[in-house]
Image 1 (cartoon, rainbow, N blue to C red):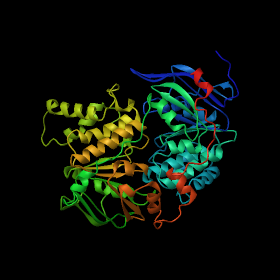
Image 2: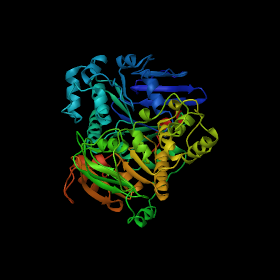
Image 3: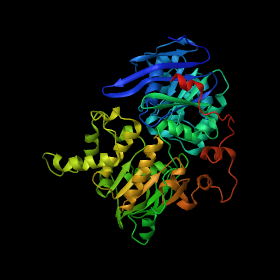
Length: 528
């Protein structure tokens, strides 16, 4: 075995992990230099999150060695890894929902003053530490997790899809922190499916495919194609173009709206939101963090009651007291947090078939003869990986999100509310979801889509509404909805106003200056 070298701050070699029949990692390797921001790339299911969990002691590998500053280390728990200088911010918040933020900080022995410093740097200056974690939005929980990790000054900070649930303003704060730590004594491992972010702050990228390390790439202005090629094992072209797929919505523009929202207000942020959603249309929703988009979707999905305004479905005013009321009116909800939406210990088939069982009006056996063809068709349509049929928790994040969509597609869709459905999902799965949304709209479904990735508006939507301060401040046709235009509207700036530099970076419309080294494959690739 080759002796450890201090050229690398962190070195993982030959790491393997299996979950039953599913091989999550197969002799994977990762080498991170001091002071660099190192991207860890791969499609969903490639093994990125598993490798991070191995490094931080969440799971035990079957094989492999890990060295930090030239010394071999094996962490048996996240606490032990933390003491060894390895800290991760995972995809899902690591906070206890029923405790307030102060209590969560005490549990992890997080020093308070450094935490306050970083929480201010990251844009949550007004955070109330007495707030229960369950009452805070997902974006705030992720920022709290990051500030907590930064407060202990780790040697290696791992960010697993850190920006996936964040709006543009908070994303920029995170990228500034990552960029600011480059060149120091510590390092950052950065996992993201957003190529503009990788190009903005990362020095090199290690690419995993099907559990194996398939290449190490120097990040340059033109390295994105090579990274995607390594990720997917093939050259991938442009994102799917909408083309004429929006024509169906235009033809139905005179139809009665499927969903009408008039002067909707909530007890908190939502003040006065009005819009129409027609059959055959994908309507985008754009908003910075905390502008009322969460409350809007909660009200329409039946999990929160409005304080003002009205909602009409097919011309009839409705009042939802429970999500089941919305479902009976043909309104279904696809959440960004798949962990809340799924029964993680149950199978793919059981999760997709769940709506069939809740619709039963009388006692009796569920007809598997009727259920099976619909479930099979949904699995085929969304190309869900069913190797881990025993439990949904064993699927990749992308496949889990497909299951949340498939349960509604299986029996037909009238109105679908999608809240950031592609958060933390690889480029191929995003393609599939974009195309599925267009196909559903083409078949007459009405779809409301909130996305934190502004580029998705032109890819998937017919038009977009922009919410600021709890009300709609702009309506923009998809053909005009470039990222700069959407950002101006999201910050309530007048048309043509100059965007501050950090807004441009957050949108990915102007990559920061990068290295000019044209070499795309590091010599290390031959060692993989």
